[in-house]
Length: 359
Image (cartoon, rainbow, N blue to C red; front, side, top):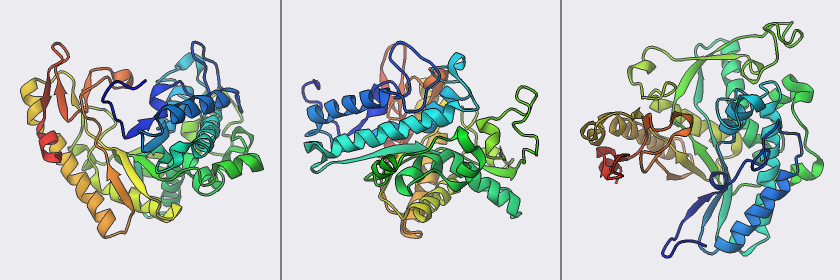
């Protein structure tokens, strides 16, 4: 039961359960069409029955790309390298995530929770901009976006995986049955989007021997499948976060929002995460001063505003990551994303300048 007085407005099922392609207490390479999809539906139905009257917006999964590619592909996140297969793992796990999402949405719409409520899925992407106007770089940037975001969004908003993925991956990419296509299409009332940084992209062709000599440098891999190389310009690197992957590129958010509008017909959209990291060992005084995060939020929300009023993107809400400094995936407490400084030794909380700015 919910604690007395607790009245949430946004629940993310992904945060409180194991992925549908793994089992609690055990882990193995995810088989296609695994039975845990049914377990996830049962779990979701229980949540809707118990809390449907209290929660207005539901998210079935948060960042499937992160836990499928980095968990079942490279193995840098759970379940880790012993269970990762960069050739097929992400595609099988991602397929099961989509089926579980559709099952949860079906359960939602069969309960009273659907009355006055909404359900969707949150995906993440760093914007990919072609480095040059050369056709091969433009095409490479589009493939990079498709392998990251459209992979999970096209089946929901357009009926199947991107044609580029179908053409390239062959039997490594699972197929949907007609009934699965029907259950997936329209299975989101809004578009949830997490976004942090951006990079440029150049084409990186695999060559005619790609995949033919597995184990000899040509093995098929998610990271090579889309034939694009991401890189950051020196200008991008001028504003670097504590996270090795994060640079402040505010114009990337506006471009991303406009891309979503064009590709998916301008759905109601929530920016469900956007944030900046500072070192975990910074002092309370430095953390509260928080100049770099204030600049990040000011610049990104400025581009967000331009996307709304100049480009007509239907943005309904914006969530900064995160309220408090917290345990960040495998980085633990070495990075701080919070608007509020957490003194881990005493658990005292100190609002940062960014919290006051955003308020």
